[in-house]
Image (cartoon, rainbow, N blue to C red; front, side):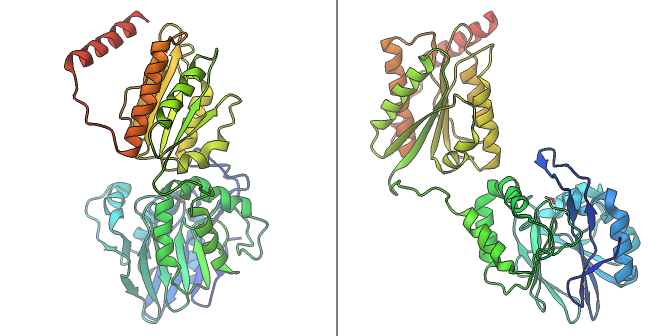
Length: 428
Ligand code: FEO
């Protein structure tokens, strides 16, 4: 049950199986559990331990470790990622092998001190291209940040072409047969893991692939799920496919895309959305699309949002809030990187009208760029208010294309608008 698994004569899997895990990191579904993969590499001058396991699974890890090495043989501890599912057993490993030197990425240094709550730690920070020798075996480091935390790195066993990839190429899939050519069908788990862990950092995936693709690779050994020894490059290729633009873009290089999502109770916010669109379309180079969120299935839109340059959201205010499909849409943004995209909100309301400001706050919280104050209209928009919507669309388009004229702030107008908002808030 707690036997190590041989990857090669000098490399063993000494991780842990966690078949009962059903939810990971609060939100990820793990319907058949997960594994925490750790490895031992034996060189002529010592042993390296690569990653550890979750604290609750430490017993399995130490049993397997003891079957392949004595603690006083351990010269190196490599931590490719400091998340507790891979460092839970570290304090005890450090206690049992105090002579071992820890190798972490440069960006993991503060994290390691915080994790162990110690300031007296001695370790070696490494960067891409640095190596550590075990005599006749050499580990080379590749800095691959944000896959999945800022600290993450991969390490590569030069003599055997084995990539210890951390969370990259991993998945939550527990099968004691361990190797990808032996376990059940884990394609869904692999794609799900990419979608939730890697996709928000797509540009970092592309950077990591630029380091990984030139390497000869016999085995990919991730920290979760099957060890990829059969056609490992297939998984590298799949990451490449997943990290490029998903939609067949018909947008020219000099055009920008603006997506307007809206939902409407009695048609007023719909009407506003149409005038916002008309205004944005007046700006050369802006390609505008309108999508109604009624029906509530927002997963359809994630690819669109990921590739759009700007997002506007129209929502009525109902019971002092924006409506659920709008919040669901914003929740789905966590799967992708929306930082820096232009954004804004608008909507009609009956008596209080909080939705627009709440949405703007959320958009800013997502680090999106919200350059304009959104349009709020009470009940049915008048001709003048629809013209205000058209102007809002036009100014949004100008910001998107970078052609907006510098605006001179009128302090009287600004103060009056703030005062009106305060009065309204107090009346609610
Ligand atoms: Fe498997 Fe990001 O920890």
